[in-house]
Image (tube, rainbow, N blue to C red; front, side, top):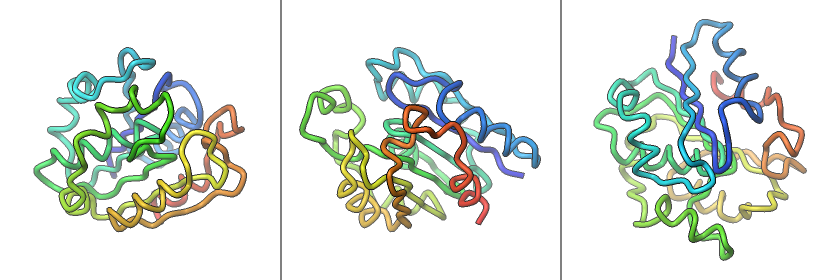
Length: 182
């Protein structure tokens, strides 16, 4: 069985969106699932968030699966740059990987600067997938396409999914659950 980590985004908590549902679904079939609560979510800091999961990072291995939403997906990219050994897979849901051109850029600068080490990211995740909506109000679909090209990821575009969060009706996410073990 795999160890699965689910990372929330800005202003998020482990109890929102589809995270509790996915955790329960995966635990029911025997996986260990961790959904850490990151501090100061309205002013995310990469180094603080990495420090929060430092112990877990040291235990990540070829059976580890990482799932992240929004800036939590960006955190996964930074984790993959730092790992010594590859993990099984990563699923980036509505990821931020470049400047958006609005007030969020300042908030996310610590996560998206300096440039990513795309080769290291590809090397450290055997399987890479991105799920993104065609109408995300925060992160353009073109950014997900660019990221998919950088890391050699499969991109699944969800019609009308907005930011793939609870506000968009995503308290369950069967498509993601199914993709994890496909």
